[in-house]
Image (tube, rainbow, N blue to C red; front, side):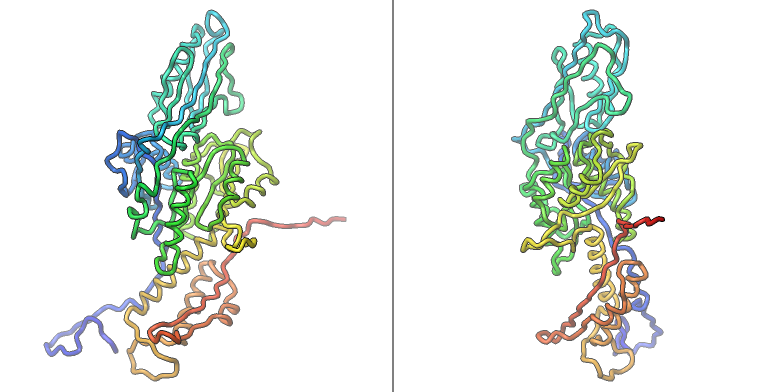
Length: 490
């Protein structure tokens, strides 16, 4: 028998007992950290470039500024999950970048004001902004009240100014992210403008570049910290490519800090399919809900917040039919049917759908991966559930073996060693692998044990006498998304 803590040459009388947990090792849940990267307000720069653990919406507002991109993303995430580990990485605006602007022009047709008092049902960035108007209000009065209502709501991503009857909205953060801020009115059925009033909306535009993630040094800031999900506030191609490069390195066998990046945009279905088609990676998720008034960066955060606790508990659980809180559904006439939704999925865009009551749901969470490096069609990494499951299996197997055999020797099969000796052999390694596969089966992560047993290979490395090689031919569990039935009758 071998002891670790009790010295073999001790002569002092003592009764000593050490603990050995090698037979009590439990895999448990894989550690799961989420990271939100977004821009803070220029007046809230204290934490820029620093990882901050988040525990409340109020903390995010105080640290990064109410209505800032990153604070809004945190709120969207936490509406869906408050009990998973969440970190934030605030980034300063590009100092040379312009903030996007848009306008609302109010026109009252009557010379003596509106015929009756009423309410303007504005929606800015998916947030409701009701504006009460009086019967005597003229165009300039209405515009003034719209600007006041917008500025009174701290969590909006814009500020408002007024000149005569024109309200100018300016994004609180500089960059193209401001183009995701939707301006509309009468979104819900039955809402109407007060009689005699018209509003002309010019969408947010003319924003400059988002903060550059490479210049911000994100790779070095998060180096050594494992984040399973990263939510990018920026949808700019260069920033997404930069995060992908970081994740690709982390997926390698020498780093093993697997993760996925979530980002989204706004616009019609064609904008999403065009963007999804241009991407091809199992580490990139593009949640898609065309013509939603919720900014894309908030949609990405909300979806990740919905997924994180599910994947933490069961990485293979089908991510479908779960409600995503805080995301506003498109108008009924803008919602898509089966054919267009299928086009979205085939483009590598993760699909969200809207219920009749306006609730938004996960429908099918695909990655942007569609083809092999050679350009051949490939579905092996299509489902993000597959990515999460592989990540868990690798972590669990490595953790299991490291916990059970931290100080093992290595030998060929067929030797007769003394009792208590910890010696790894190919036969013992195969037994451990079969045992762990049965455990994975009990969690419904893998299937077909007999086939696995027949095809696994455990052998000593012919080029390294200290290494044991494992071929793990795992057959992952599938998700039940489609039922095909034929109702045949006479």
